[in-house]
Image 1 (cartoon, rainbow, N blue to C red):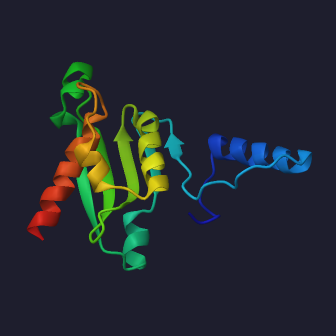
Image 2 (image 1 turned 180 degrees about the vertical axis):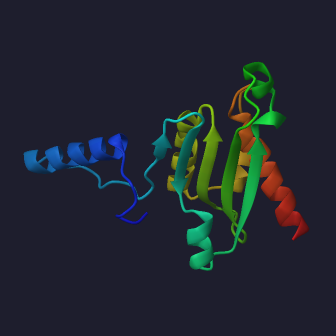
Length: 154
């Protein structure tokens, strides 16, 4: 992520903790390169990793897996049918490259993608992990299935 990208409270807090550790002589690991972004609007907006624009500019082959809130059981319960979750996956190794969500709970869901980015996994994780039902996490599996279908077709 470029340094000119907006940094929010969570990132600033971690930067402060690391500065304090350094000043106090306490050993600390450097910050990860994948900062979560959360915008607490209605609907919430959340992202981590690369964007489609960055991937296109860098000529990285990618596929987009999409899940729409209207297609999952939890949204029928909640009554919020306008949300969308996107996974950006590498077309060759299927690794996760980025995540974007505009939906209720988007800022709560982002941490799974952040963890997956650190493990260098991707499509396999989302296809083989069992998520509680009915929860918003069902979107991960739906988006992975969408991407998997697109990858098989093209």
